[in-house]
Length: 479
Ligand code: GLU
Image (tube, rainbow, N blue to C red; front, side):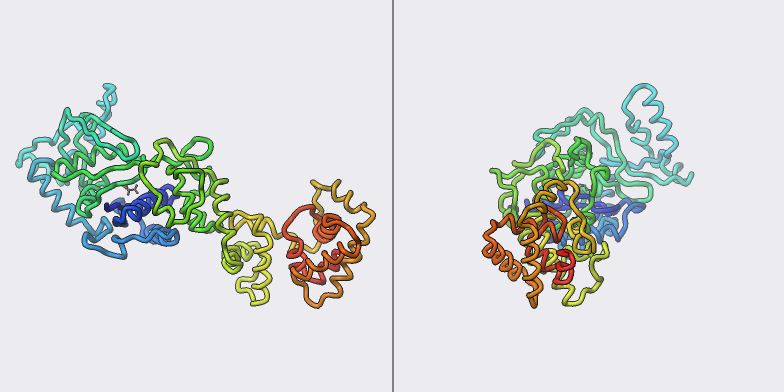
């Protein structure tokens, strides 16, 4: 099995592209096949090297290493389409000689006029065959006018083009609807449908797994394979990705590129796990899988035909679970850029600040699903004033009105004052001691201290909060 991911480097690396890459990658690993990366840059106006670099960086970040292709090389290179023009040219010659393709000298204006006429008659526009059988003299005359030909494929009439799609089952199209289409533009650049066939064949691709939007291109590609007498690979068209509202995933639904998720502080393991579930369903209820597990479990027969729904809550749930497994240092690394951006951390923190920030991240980690969310959770560590939780004002007032409230606060203050160094363990021991001394149950000790120091009924671990505040701030807040 040899599969490929063949992105056009024309913009941000969309999450849908990453999903196509992943399905190919997982299948290659599962079947011990080859995963190839080819860059389809024939749209020279829109392709950029920057976009290619972004895609490669994102694939690497997600852990999808390719066995053959751009940068790593291989026997069937080069792997960038604009570097393969001589290869296409040879195949084009072959098609021209065998009569499966022909030169077309029609100008854009002439083609447009024909199109208008056909539309006017209520027909589906297709090439009218004007240059189907030009003589050498006619061609020479056009050339003398300065016309440069395109190359069209001669599409057989009255044939059914059919294939068995790994996802969609049996698919068939009538060849009459296709019309002779351009395979090489007048500037000598092949069109996507043509280059993709030459590449997939010469690179030995056995299975073509790609987005559903290419389904309608497949009959054209099959016609080219047949004209060349080449074996047609097995196709698998994976469904569209939609937002929860049932509309095609777009910017309106939030972040759409891998880069954006990376910047928001999502983990590559979580993105991979989430993308795998966009259209593929494992057996059983389990949803958390490492890449290695996915490589073992993935199979095309569990890829669904109906559109996949991009559920950000699910991604957050998955990411939350992977974040839980991070070491405190890794969690800090993930959150630091967001703390810096919010003005909560220095660009290059001292060892002391680093230790404090690491504890801060650990302290709030159960409350955040991705790196950027930390900013919403740590405000109180950077404010001088206590912001009272207005939503729970009544409950807060009740706690403050308890008879034991001043006793607890007084006792806690004394213990803090007596501490040389505040640590979560020391705070824990102090609270325990107060419980013992006063005979009060846990809640009647925790709550007054939490409310007096944070103004909140709920929040992260109190022992950590007190430690992070430090002696001075805690004493100030206790009044
Ligand atoms: N370059 C095409 C795209 O990015 C790839 C299509 C294919 O996989 O055949 O959509």
